[in-house]
Length: 333
Image (cartoon, rainbow, N blue to C red):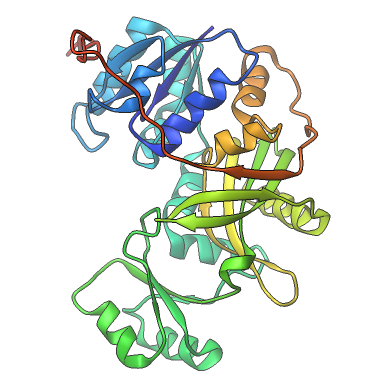
């Protein structure tokens, strides 16, 4: 089979490639990215160029790429590409006889905006951290009155804790909001020791598999992941996915409170940066999804090995005589 993975320069895209290579699948891996020196490009069987998702030519470039390689499956490796593939999934699948693993646009939109995530979780009857938009003075006043400080200030759209700060009084809050737009202010729940990342796989309206990992963060990414079986948390996570109805993978990030409730502050409607870490524990979600998409195999909950995964830096050498220019696919107008 041929599998196209976009985002070879992103942690997510690289994690998808690692999981593919660790699987039992006999896959020809095509890796695409805008930067010819993105490391993930050198892990695949062939390299291909794509413009940035914000570029006006991006859609045409994707279609040219699909025309050239005719992949059986397309796996999206960056958040910024999700809206395009979500909107075009059915058309691309018909035109190129491929499978595009991406959720519906409404699910992607909920996950893309942290305030929309809060509203979704609240309206579904769960317990997300209380949240308010700075431009709504009444809601902000109620938030401070109800939960007090500390509070978390973060971009509504963003990842890896970029632009996130914890404020402990009104002056610090004012300073964190000064001159900035597109923010959300949230209740600070739990502690670093009770932070989790969880993954689910859902098809045909049913959550088929799940994994919950406690984690340590470094620079906004999971640095260490711990699988400590917890049936209560797993049940909560499956309920989140049943409400969201993703197509394939979803990632829920949360902290637990004193009552043991999972307080979700972020959803990703995609694989997670911890995907290869999960695969090492026996939960290779990339492999499970591809088997389902291409052969109709029902996704079943795998046995997960309790233990710890430690993440570390690695290097790759590119010889001077290597052709570092990915394939350019002709774009028809």
